[in-house]
Image (cartoon, rainbow, N blue to C red; front, side, top):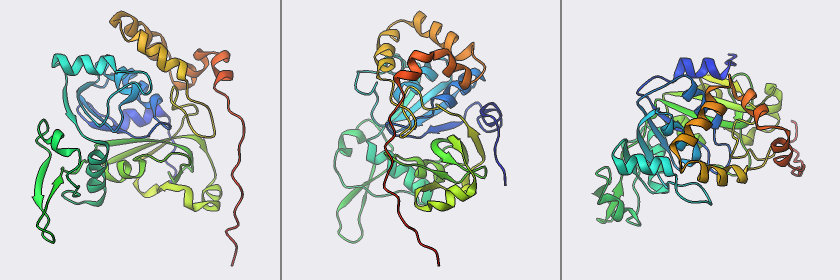
Length: 300
């Protein structure tokens, strides 16, 4: 089944006010373009969940989209604090739940597998259980020792960006793998964005790279440069300058509102956003080719 549609159509169809939205991706493949489209469409009262919120949730909270954030590690990676999210939490403007990376992934894994929980060893969790009642201890029936558990996470919508996908939603990722697969299988709906839309024969030619199968995907959107200012391995580099600039810009509510107006609300889509960034930025983020060694799958 061909599931290709515009990003505007996907967000309009599958992201509703009050939804729990999980934007996947770790270090690269962070779906900024989808966050911007959610802002444009004026979604409100969302619960935003992410292992590493990054700037995408700073921007969405600044735009008034969220009433709660669920996270593990909160910061502007390599720079400092996410000023807007932190201020919203400290002022009580939004609700929040904090987890370790591993406990967040166990929530998704349990959700994906249809299980009530996944047990964890008592590592850093004792500190988190003091502030988060979702951390509970149960007794391992085999050893008699306590283990930590957290409830499964079932996003209403998971947003996953990939390097390439076919029109049905079979999607391939290479480079750093995050929680894309777990988030997609745990969610009720999946919006997939891709740098390239390829024929299914391309996907079949290298099946081990297929992380997301079509059977769980609801919408497939061709969105080149979707991850900016993060990066997509093999397509463009991380915009480190932007992360530094956001740290300064986010000190002022007025500057943040001006940026959102100019780069999100006043542009019709991500393609126009990318053009607006300018040729100098495009050239700065270009990468050199570095191909992997071919393998022989054989034919019988």
